[in-house]
Image (tube, rainbow, N blue to C red; front, top):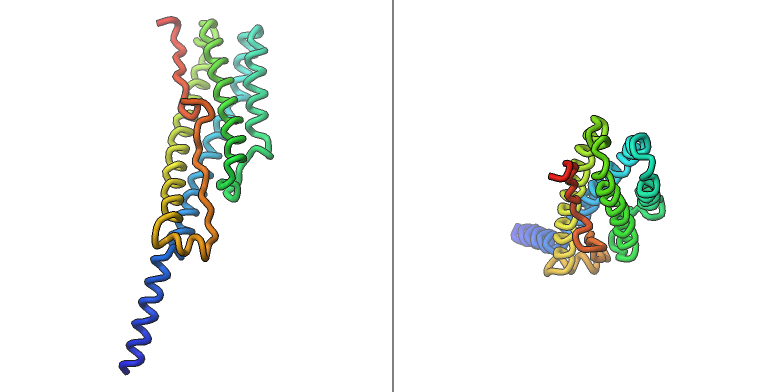
Length: 202
């Protein structure tokens, strides 16, 4: 009887030790970060999906701004190329993350330049369709900012988990875990929504 109880105690202690060595915590943290990255991709895709609407609105009202609009369209094409997209397996590759960040930053900058140009056209700002687009864009930029913040926090938690005792044991020996790459602005402030003031010179 005593031997059986001792064996059960050893099994229980062993299970507890394994649980405290990253067996469950590492994959749990990794899955959380992967899920947050999916939210980031969805937020950026939502912004990209708005560009065709902007193209139609601006082309019909500001023909002379084709060049600026073309910059947005080209930046969108670059940011949505299949080879620039990141899967969960790529999140520990800083070079791939940097390429993704650069493409998204260029699209954001192109949009901001177009919005500044549009300031010169009160008749465009007054259009109902353009006002609706601006509301959608501002909402999209805010969702991008929140998704990036949540992703970076999940990455921070994952990276902390795989580097601290006792989880580091399971992370290195069992999971072969590698640090994930947080999303960082290519240029300062590039990851936050631009301040788009469409009022006429107030």
